[in-house]
Image (cartoon, rainbow, N blue to C red; front, side, top):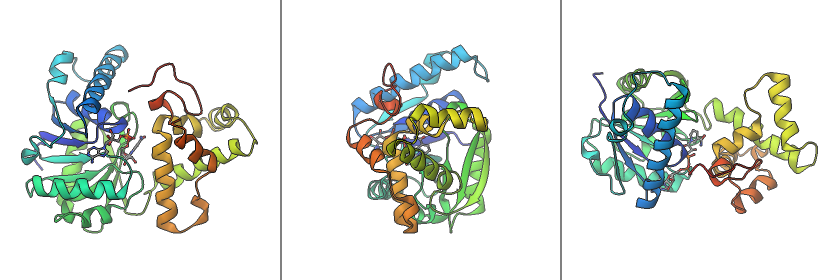
Length: 289
Ligand code: NAD
């Protein structure tokens, strides 16, 4: 496929803002959508912060003026410009009814050629494809967080995903300087089928008083050489997203091994969502958004 220029990003939360930054930094025109102007303004602040951070790290690629990069992002609540989108990456809250509504709307607005990539944690891509009139143009692209810094993406082939669609995803990933690992469709794919179970079990250990969060994480870091422990990872992902994902796996497999830990449910009810709210298993000086 030839170059992909205009990319719609739906959902401007943790993943949507990271994607908007990574796409704009690599020269793409980004159409960013969320529910309210306030969320979009917060997203712009997050991207600005991300660009400053990238500057400090001496990020790869040509140095560009922050204003030039930000100027490539157009924010709207009503899908402005999506009738010209080459590619759309959907990153709304992990809730099937909500996502279904978004895909129906995208399907009505976007040209037939537009590819839809679902950045979902556990929802099957085949089900998402079936909510559109273009299942061959739908695939899963499970980006890792933080998007600008992670080189690899789990790419998921839905039942009807075409070879041309996978090709378009490869082109976009190459333009982003990332690599894809292709897997077949299954709830949670490879990464989250394992990760969500691990995180949920780690929360159980804290819930049962077997170890504090710090000890659980330290064992994974120092004994296994992981960069982060499972509870630090949970805070980074967002405990609401973890809970929705575990519930999604539980519903998909009807297997009690995915039953959500009561402590996880209580923390989400209490608004302790991890980094994005300033408090999860750990405290963060300021919420990121
Ligand atoms: P988030 O809660 O930070 O952001 C979700 C955004 O979706 C919010 O800003 C919300 O306002 C917006 N939204 C909700 N309904 C909408 C609608 N109808 N139209 C437009 N926007 C709407 O969540 P997140 O962590 O960015 O996760 C987004 C998706 O990416 C989820 O499906 C999640 O499972 C997946 N994901 C998350 C991670 C992670 O590490 N957080 C990693 C990979 C994939």
